[in-house]
Amino acid sequence: MYHCVKKILEDTLEASIVLEHPKNKLHGHYATPIAFSLAKIYKKNPAVIAEEISKKLACVKEFKQVIPLNGYINITLSKEFLNQLALNAINRGMDFGRQKDPKDKILLEYVSANPTGPLHIGHARGAIFGDALYRLGNFLGYGINTEYYINDAGSQIQMLGLSIYLTGREYFLKEAVIYPDSYYKGEYILELAILAKDKYGQKIFQEESNIALLSDFGKDLMLGEIKNNLLEVGIIFDNFVSEKSLYGEWGETLKKLEKSGGIYQNEGKVWLYSSLRGDEKDRVIVRENDEPTYLAGDIIYHANKFERPYDRYINIWGADHHGYIARVKAAIHFLGYDEGRLEILLSQMVSLLKGGQPYKMSKRAGNFILMKDVVAEIGSDALRFIFLSKKSDTHLEFDIEELKKQDASNPVFYINYANARIHTLFEKSSLDENEVLNITLKDLNQEAQNLLFSALRFPYILENSFAERGLQKLCEYLKNLAADFHSYYNAHKIIDTPTESQVLKVCKVVSLSITIGLDLLGIQAKKKM
Image (cartoon, rainbow, N blue to C red; front, side):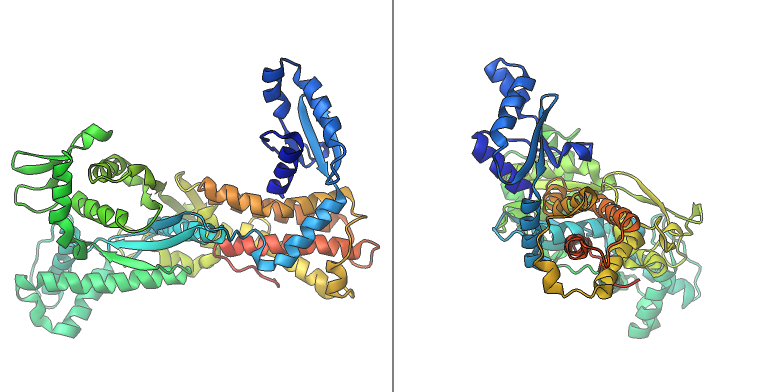
């Protein structure tokens, strides 16, 4: 609808148009400030120009009313045009809002949590945001592939193996052991030790040389658990890339960096010249013992990414990685790629309450709240919606008891209740569905027209949400659309009225927008409550 109206205006006025929504619905469906920009060109008062343009637009059949107001031009769409748009939406069904014109190919990397433990609630926010962005982008015609980068090389994996090894010595060999400060804690480490004993016998804990084997053993089990955790909230990745598997490309990567002047040696180390590209200082990528650093793995990975045929690359990282952006982009630049093709989105941490009190940490995971524990309490749908209801780079705090309520305070319940009410209306109606769909919308009152207009804004909301990487915009839209419907439902009788078929047609579009919108958030709309 937005694009239709914009095109009509631009074709009629032969000028580029900006469209806005008046704050007061009584002022029309759309408003344009074009008179203000033209006033600078023609040296005339914007109000005079708005008056002239309004007269020219008055003959456009799609517009019921065009009124100049304080220099703005306010437009109310005709019932006939709204009817045509409603019919188009219904005929498209679950493709309403979908775009099929091919757009950029995008590689979307997200979660990528170290496979050293189960997913915690902080990982969950980035996971759900990434999955919803993927769903929405593909719906809009972007060719998006998803990828999980497995950090399976380096000190964190070695520490996992050492943690399992020491736990095994303490519990099965009955030795007094001293744990490093950075060892992995939680009951899951003991679970891994028990599984290792079952597979290899107690001898696995007798020799330090077995730590590497325990590292791989623990990593594989943790990765399997992470995949299962993600599956519980409907997330499946197209591809998993192992950091360890990429180290064969390290030599070639170093040569590229050296050739471009992106690295230098000092104090026996190899440094990335990242300060030349906006970083606060240069970064070590190879230590004195010739071991690559954590950053080296990311450099190889991004070199590998940029060799693949994508137009753009999106990474979703935890907010604690903010300082990491400049050094990674510097490396991409020195490798000879356009670092502007990499977009990095940050996901802030989450504060979780239960009945107003901090949610208890999981004994199994140590000092973390496990994603699976929260899903078990409130379900995947509620978790998805609350995580997407705020911009991903802002702090989020919520109380899970609020999301268990079956009333209007629970946004998922509230939206689903609107959809269920609509399906109940169709069940109660004696009208044939074709009779409803083919009816012309000529007798709708203003509230029903406003409700239809809200539902028809859906495609624009989708585009805007993806363009701004703001899934919270879609969440807010669905809550407002549900509120508009509930308000109309409570104020007006629908069944057995002269306008029953017309209002049901409007309701059909509302249900369509809610159903597709929830689906793109990874939530299945309910038809009954």
